[in-house]
Length: 228
Image (cartoon, helix red, strand yellow):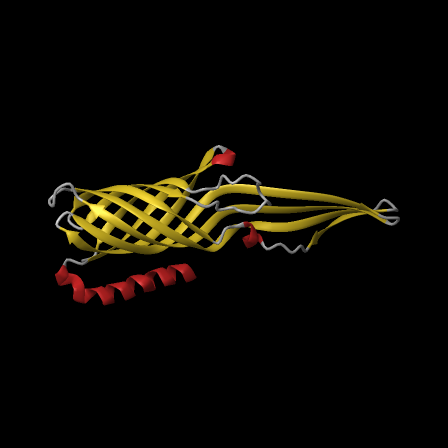
């Protein structure tokens, strides 16, 4: 909820600040889409979402510079780490299991892109840009259980508290490139297809994996609406 409020606050602030520039060819709008990204270690794909506000202004009759800011959720990681330990004493045997999972990452994202049209009246627009994203949250679980067998044969289980800073296993930022194409469906509404390629490893720690394969590689499909 906090991220949604921040997102719409950014939209409102940018809209109010941009109104005086409308006569100079300035455009402002919002967009959203679905991201399908690869999960190399699971040999599968994960699904995500992104929402953003954007603003652009003309460089030439056929090109524009655009800045966008928004929120991104990458889901479908399905990472799981299980650690077990057995401690034997004269009174009991204690077997502990600690489970840690990672299912999704949440980022706020900013991007600067160059937009180009083959002709000023063309419905097609080609886009190339670079983005920077900052980690603001993650989804998953972390818990521990202990199975205890006492010397008299009585057995029972209990939940145990363990300390683990999962964010230390995650890279706090992501950056990369985006290549896209959009088609104007009608005045003020476009469909967009983009390829996203991240450069750093998103899961940089060794808890879930020791292989640096979590670079974002994904395709997004969404819609952009121009507000003015």
